[in-house]
Length: 177
Length: 108
Image (cartoon, rainbow over all chains, first blue to last red; front, side, top):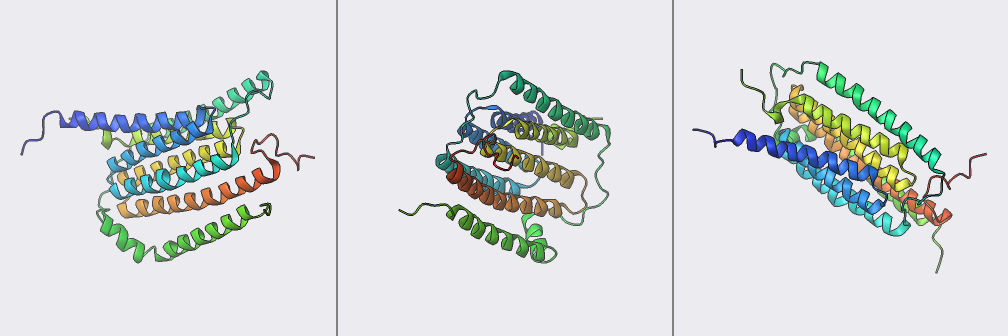
């Protein structure tokens, strides 16, 4: 069976598109002044990240990324934006200190990126000799219900506590009609 | 020797994850509202997830473990978002603002 001509180039182009979507979404999320655009940038970044998860042989996590991040987290942040009007203050600090803090943040993040990039590029990442499972959805489900059942239950408990706590915290301070 | 195709190169995934972490830290230092900082924190969560998934794909003997780990990260991120947004809404009710510069009551 001969492969489709130039299929590897097409796959590489789609991979680069996913990388570009992720990085562009992250840049939009971190740099725009309006918070609602920042939330949209986070959604774009998560869609690109789902594509990268698909390339990492995990379609299950790609689906979960879109469901949880784009479908739940971004929508919840949009609700909070509607309730709290949190746009960035226009110019209430002097531009010199803003420039100082901006350049400091840029230096810190560039140092983090440079160090991690050096670390990742210097090593030789060889594959392990043998694999004990194929990483399919059925293998994930079997592990979740046997080895990781305790952690699974604890996550559900943490979610319940978080929901009840969120309701209790957001309820205080509400003025009676 | 044929060149390794792009999606099979682990260093590309590590570079993207490092870039996400750097952008998240930059936003966390630069943002002046609570929700903006929360979004930058989500970017850092995404960097950690991508890093774990890349290691899971290229290094781990059991590929199911990393996927379960990232699934747990997503669940905890959802719980964290719910708590943080409710705190932000409570802060907004009390102070009429979510700018970090104005939330300085404990600043003696």
